[in-house]
Length: 471
Image (cartoon, rainbow, N blue to C red):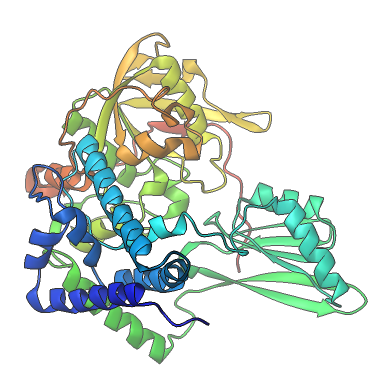
């Protein structure tokens, strides 16, 4: 391995030194040298200085790992001068892009980190392990190679939807077991002799595979709940306690600070917010609709990250809000025709049984859906907006998260796929932060008591499939 060249060394050492300097000097470093949006504390030097600041050690570590892996190799090929010019050009280009994005979104949040320079370095890199391949062909090649080497059992470890895993087994002979992820729900399905099995999110269940390899392979998956019946491991419990203490210290205002109280159960588990109407979802979208003064509001269930419930009668704390609003999202407003709204609702329920994050929590409308053949369908006659039947030609003012507005096509919302199809905004910068909107909504309630409950705004006419048991 070639020695690390001087420019890459200097960048690594400078980033590390500045990180420790920020630990000594505190937030003043960020207020002066982070990249702040225009009108929110921006200074010209910040288009470079932000690239040497990092929020925490993990942020620093992974950026420096990438710089070490790729920077040295490019510097050996290009030389010091060209390498540094390209690196800082990438940092500045990323900064200018971020300033534009923040301006368009009305964001006031700062940006720090060497990621802009690092991603710039990745552009000219070509590595044998970086390639786009046909998944099924790659799997077939791997099975053939492993069998040729004498493998008696082939296990596919995947991260895709259950239907894609099933299709993989059907297309690639020789796989004996698929250990899958991505769906966030415990599920198992047998395709011929091959089991496809997935655990749910947050390790609430563990899958155990009993395997017998002889002339043939026999696999039996078992589900084991991880609950109070299993004794805590002392070392793990101590580590979790330590992490929780550190987390509580980092949450602004204190983790246990109470924002309000809920009268009813606020369901936040992923099977709930990604598959049905919930009181928590109703709270989030009702607050958004009131703040933006629109006809309709919706947020995708995948944006609600708490994966836990807030019990009836319990306080709503900063810790709960950190879980709900894991990502920062602003609210944007625009107009949709009734037909466009109907299309959005149909996409929302299209994968209702899979735990997919596209499922919407809604406000200002009510609808029914059920299966027609093998598809979930929302009919126009089963939708009401503001208490009136849906008018396919009418325009409705709507609000959602900026993430859905800019990236919703990834979840099948094709209307948000490009500027050509994306409805123009009717909101103006700065667009409000969703968490701040919800907090203000709760604080404005009498005694900060949340009385939001499930009220029938989403009705499913097809029985919910019974999930596989986990004794």
